[in-house]
Image (cartoon, rainbow, N blue to C red; front, side, top):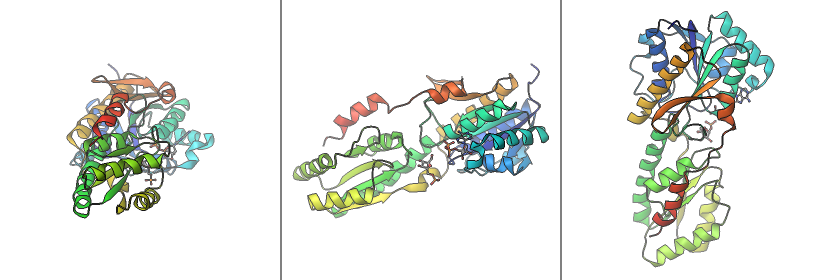
Length: 325
Ligand code: ADP
Ligand code: F6P
């Protein structure tokens, strides 16, 4: 098979996610083994516009599979939302001989990828975000590591909450999606899981539940709160005032985005990076890689962006039973 592209560029964009380095490594090594040149575009679309472009070889991606973050750095670039800059980005690719680009990021980054494709650069998206909020795929790079990080943190909070007989509100990331909250809430045996999709501000129900559990002898209470639901510190004050139980809020924040990727994130990110290069070699463009029912597949970017994703209905269903103590 003769390759449809000769030089592949790879960039990471939007929020970083553990496993992005494994994906970069796979893009570089699969490209080289297919006889292609490969260049790293640093700092996402911002770096593309500034021509921050470096040659990559097998050694450049040695010893990175186990590391969090992204060796190519990442950025958010508002300019790239405008057509003149998208066109400029495509021209810069051509100037550097880049005829195929792999964009590792979330939905926003895929919008940018699609624009590059419309200006003649073969472009493939790889889902990289801890939020799991990309509808066309059951897996996104970094989610598995992030939920394990959050779960371990909540286990630790449980210890100190028990010692002090406190209520603890733990805020997890996810932008407007509740997947991280749902998974970590189940895994840590939370008494309450608040997600943007399912919680509509009924704080009185939480207060009543905390009071019921306390009457039954429960000494600590863990409430996992998805960012976007509401201010965790304010909620803590309301719960403490209504129940008389000391309540603390902990915002886990960016620690969820770092750390060594789990085995799953390393392996799936490697598969997705390799798949993206294979698609480019087949002459495909404007596609995004996904994982569905045990297979790595690809979708048209516009179709993928039009899909909608809710919380896993069965996981949500079981939380109602499992959070009863
Ligand atoms: P994510 O990729 O994780 O969803 P963002 O939504 O912040 O993160 O998007 C990352 C970057 O993708 C933006 O900073 C911008 O450079 C680019 N981008 C986002 N939306 C668009 C768009 N509609 N058109 C072109 N580029 C976009
Ligand atoms: O999309 C990943 C994410 O970590 C979201 O969960 C969060 O809302 C956002 O990025 C935080 O962005 P920033 O790093 O710009 O604070």
